[in-house]
Image (cartoon, one colour):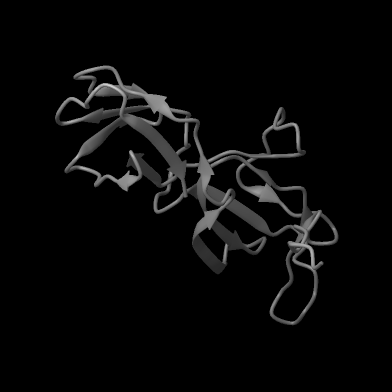
Length: 161
């Protein structure tokens, strides 16, 4: 039987000039997706030590870049601050879903797992996707508020996309 497989992530990010030479001293800026608000990346899988922002590439044009549960904009510049490229919407985790929260009668405010700056939150009630700014609003990255109270027993699930 065939196994479901996934391409491994690069253990180190490496960047090159247009001539194929390592981008020594290049700068990788990381922002919350769609903004210029700096968003932390980390030096290893523990997430205990944040990288500088921008991250300065080493003598091989490499850097350790571990990301949190958010959407990012990556902006790459050379050592003279010339823009090489910018990519928005870099997604780190595909469809992380929360455990269901069972509503009390009339409940409107729900605390949900943090989904991070630049993340896109999908809210599902009893299997139906709800519409942002119509059915609910996001007070912050851990609180959603419905415009009308839910019925007791309705199940609220969030998914970070």
